[in-house]
Image 1 (spheres, helix red, strand yellow):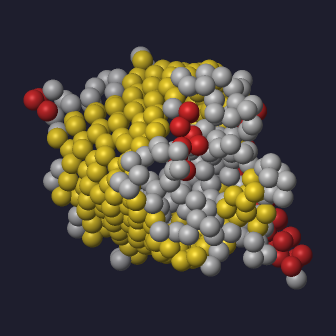
Image 2 (cartoon, one colour):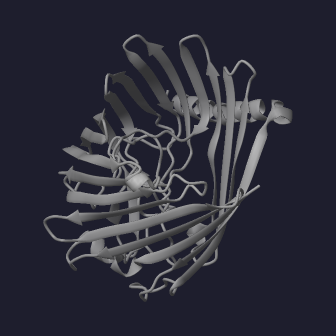
Length: 404
């Protein structure tokens, strides 16, 4: 029976991807595709902390693009977003992924999405504790903003009382980690070839999720239930003490996200109750954003952001987190000009230990076909804190993207 179930998962996942490929191929004559190429240059001002890591400079280039086809009646849609990075320093960071390859069919009051897709849940700025569908692409960045594409089938239906969605995820994608050459890692590298799963699970175990969304007046509400494999692995030292083995555990969680919009205020809450590897815990993000619009008739908008982060998991049983008792403070500047210039500064501060993870991001268009980005990350922590293992990895990143 187990063999037949695994075969069903295998066939269903391949059917998802194959179906999307066939659809996009059939529409090739009407499919628009906008490719882009980005040159990226990272600089780490401090010497590496561990043997094998590269010194200071990390140049790379990545290729992407967005393909789209929409039927004349706008009830059918195909999306295609490939991604390929070539990194000169870290072999693990050289990788290819299909971020999106999906087909959406709309009917009268329901829709069906099938293929490889990226799904976002949440309202907070610093961390989205409810965002559970996609795996994070940690070789891209350590701040949980880049995602791998996820094979899925989603059935959605609009009703008078809100939108309901059912997700089936036939195949689990393991997390990426920097290699021995890479920065932004701990003293012991992760053994990507010997991942393990507990409670009889595996890549083809299949995950399920239910989500409800509704807007009531000034409130945007989301409620979800998820059961499947946790995206973050528990890292266990191997017998030789030379590598970390990623162990993917079963996760069941329920979550709530609410955003209240009132004048220039956005009040935000994300809250999750989880059961993972016999550990029951809660994770939350609570805060606000206030925006000063068009300051002195300059067109400049200034946003002030404050959020509190909390997580009480037992890190001896489940994957560790850096966001146990933290406060996030930040500001967002939007120039609202032709260049679409925007600057975001934020810092996550552990109010118990004083550890700080801060970042500043600036981007603007150059002409009609190029975009320039600057990102800087600064880390500081006491030697006994988990963040201390990355303290030598403060960095400055420059990107220049050309759209064709």
